[in-house]
Length: 214
Image (cartoon, rainbow, N blue to C red; front, side):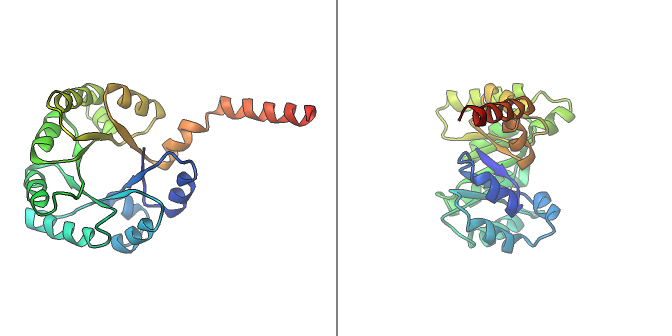
């Protein structure tokens, strides 16, 4: 699993669980923290994470490629580049992979399987379909994810689906069942997935009874 945040307290707490191998972030998440991107990414890179995906910004291919180089320079061994998949994004993916074939690229802002298919063909290593945002737009995210996965599997592609954008824990399960390889979770969704009220109540009773018998 991946953690979808730029909050250091959330990162430190979540990493104690042992279930997160990497982190994704984007300009909106960083803006919410009221921090400058590069210094915060450098702080995040000090954590025990295999990879940190950082999203490029820019209105042109050249802008996005330039920003990608700035991001990559923060730590070439632990950085992955997130690139939004519009027409400019596809060309950015292709050109960036020509320059840095070993650096993982995550195609993001995906709402349809058609976007994802083009992302695979352009050279993305991973794809981030926006589950809840698709639902809000009256798009079935699970059907789209299933179509993405079918395309990937039938062609023996190395590309992986990292489902994103969740508002309910059940959406995570449905995305995985639809074919997502893994997910990137906001901290509050991670908490809701594990701190189930009924389980918390049961554990409380077990502890009370346990203290009596021991």
